[in-house]
Image (cartoon, rainbow, N blue to C red):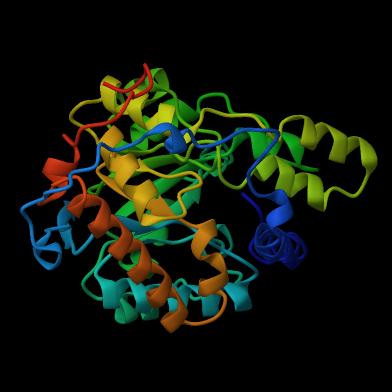
Length: 357
């Protein structure tokens, strides 16, 4: 691991994280990525013209990592330079608490190494005392020396309910100085999952998790899979936008359309891991897309980039954004005759793709 007293690398990481925020807010790196889409647009519900339901009484509640959510939503990991991240994290925590939805923080690497908190301390739990909060570390850091002590610190600093280990091999491969030795990481994730007294979540960052890998992760003791499929922000394209030379930019853009589309990833992981909690994420923008993700097998849905502008603004803006998403999800339930999420998972589809069970 890096020496905590070496502020140079920490400053570089912080600047890179803030660059990521600015670039993602620029829709030029968002989908479509050379025609790659989430696949959720191909999921069409059969309309129920006589739902026999009251819209206001549809039950969207669900349990997640030991707590109850009012709606099946996770504010997915966002980050930025420490000062900016602190503001964003405060907004997200306050909004998550107001709406009773889950919150996943961005990478805690800088905070773990004692360089800056970025709002990732006990004030986060004070802002969101009743909802699930998920800590977050990079899988590459497990290879570089992170173990139970570092992961426990990530959990304790925010009083987290679970810890995410994020997978980003493509992003690391196309950025200057990325961590590209990933040997033995599956074994390290398994050791962590067996050793920690709380759930371990494994997520991609936008290229998807295959059914086969999900099954191997679950066999290693992982409790939750966040598919984070292709169709949303392309981190290869983000790194291309940051690249300082033409060759690196060209290489990164070659992989801008890489990945498993979100819809296929959700359906595949659900089929392979029928008893595992699945988070559907990767390019979800609306409550209708959340409904489609749940119909494909997700237990809850994650959203990051679509709410980033609101998160950069205020807690009220985040609440307004997700209130809209929740209302759209409720209407999708209403117009499929689904009184709750269990019913939505059985809602009839029109000409579903072959990969849909």
